[in-house]
Length: 300
View 1 (cartoon, rainbow, N blue to C red):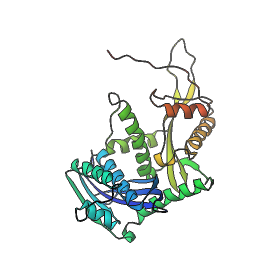
View 2: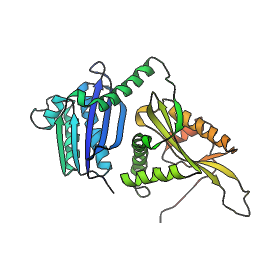
View 3: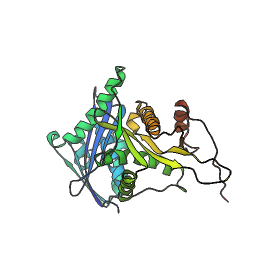
View 4: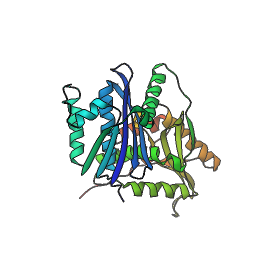
């Protein structure tokens, strides 16, 4: 069942104005329960542009979750007044962002935007700052430690956000095959993975922030006279958040998969990758995977 109403807190930040920028978004249901959070780097932009990008990210995700009504809070007084038609948008760089929000607003039955003090927007502010700090460390050539551990229910919000990006990629590439899941279906899927004794869901994190996740399963081959029986590890899904591509999280997750396989006395790991996903092909080959078969079809 879709979530009808969401309460969203957004923040955009830029160091340099313009300079390296990032966004932080917190999505909660009408009872105040955390649904998802977003912490993502942008390119070089201004504070106001970052604020707009944060609102766009929040509204896009709200629509993907099936929300019809959104209550949105921002600590940017200028942006709130512009979106409330109290100020005109004169900056040319902000006009297309403003138009994008108006398009998203038209898809909702109701959107209320209000200004809040920064002290009441600490969660979104912290998420934007975390993404900025990661970008700063990357520019200095530092490599903060990335750790991989088993996921818990507390990880559901960032995991769902990361898998949503993966889902969107697949739906847009092959809409005739993939469909969007409701929030309830996504949570049920995670619950079933967590309850499966032959599966594991792990997350890669840095400084307490989830960067990516991987879903593994212990498999046994079907019984065919022509095939040898075997046991192997299947990578069902692996995804790294869009703001953390190239951070090393993907490699850390793949290494953890190998460790999990070794713990079970298994020496083969398999995965499926769609032909449109050329970036994934390159990554898997980089970490030592080779093509073993081709799945082909024909639409008639």
